[in-house]
Length: 337
Image (tube, rainbow, N blue to C red; front, side):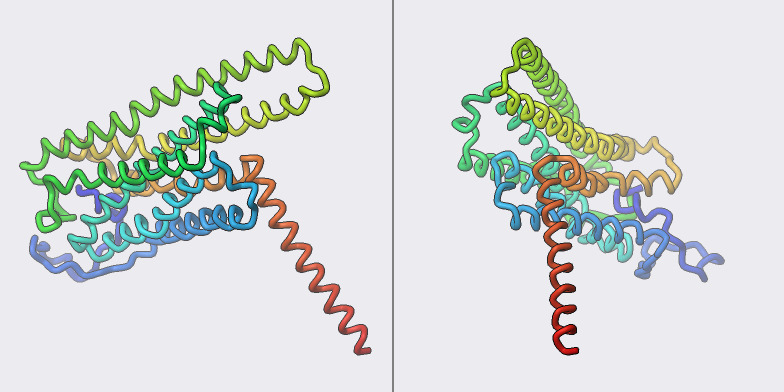
């Protein structure tokens, strides 16, 4: 089964063809199936709404424009791109089964998935520097270096996702057929490289990095607990916020793994042609890879201290505006009596 069929394999069949076998060259009739497509549409809408909210909060709250949040802005842009392009194109592929649409689906979701992980790794590196080199953090992590790092993240993700153009062309791609034998060795090597570079190595990197970070935070907390004068109380509170922020970023990384690990394994198994999963499993795995783009903004909007405070401020501002509008209306009506 091809990748385009993963989410649309349980699409309802068109009636009237039961008495004869469909030939390979039969023209595909575009069909929208509410049962198969509504989940993707709702998921895309939610992804767009929550990631747009991130940009609204940053536009409203200047204090959110920190060097650390630059990477979260990039992550929100990546996730927003998933909601605006990856899911709509994937749904379009399921409906129309056009070669070029389904072909572009593969590269778009590979690009956005590489972007997501790269931003999470960048945030991890930023937190590592903030904890281990706290006195020199502002000298090491500057606005110019953050922008340069973001440019590297986007360009490397784009370049790696386009590697498949080397051996596979849109004219040779068929969404309803398995990968051609002549491409299998290259596709296998690419899948292994993706798994190692964008899953196995990041897991090792994150495990080591966060182990060192947690160890350093515990060491600093023990040292402060020996003698905690009043002027160190604020520093203790800051350490607690750092601990919570790191836990949030770690949750985002685990979300990425849980969303993408099954799909990477599925790509490998499909190329080997020795995996026969039921349609519902293919459907779930097909959409699971997009869940991280929805959970990421939810995690740091409602979990990260500065974003949550900005969200609460925005809500209170809306409520105060509404209450003021009501009071003005009451005063106008009272004056007319």
